[in-house]
Image 1: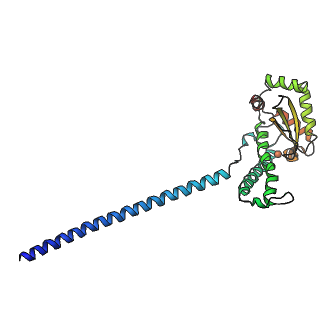
Image 2: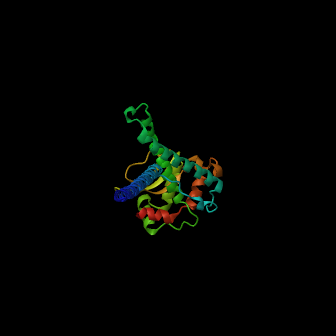
Length: 251
Ligand SMILES: [Fe+2]
């Protein structure tokens, strides 16, 4: 009888111990599962962040919105501006495309005659300047763009002789190029000059601070003026955002 009682107690002790063991087991299993879930979640978040960084670090060049110009310029129509915005967006897209492709392209195959890496490098400046010259152009357009500052006016007179000569030089430069006219401040001597740039990337001397951009590609005026580029340049001058140009001059 005593023996039976002892055995009952031993059994009860073992069952209790086993249950206690089971509790520990499930607690440990739950803990491990929780840890695994936590690590999985952390990994998922980390990969997501990495993906976003890669995606947005590649797509660094963004299309700026210039629709505020619509209906607000004199002699430059909305149809002309809309067509121009579309072309500008195309340059931004191509710039991002080249920047995405360049790191993945085999540098060992670079070659002066032909090579994918070499071609992407050679064309890079076209969409780059196509993007940022257009932004500079649209930013220096406005309705009621104010007046040329005294400081800028003095600098123009010092460099060109008179304001009239500056505008004559600007328009003559526009008639000389299929591309851009850029009024620039030379960082070496502070002199202002109008430089002509063929396409988007050929002809600009070094050390230039661009203070005004005049797009002289035919796409900038053909809807409104056909082949009459001088009339377009007159319209451009009426719409210059001098507040912006003044700021660029002193920047
Ligand atoms: Fe353009």
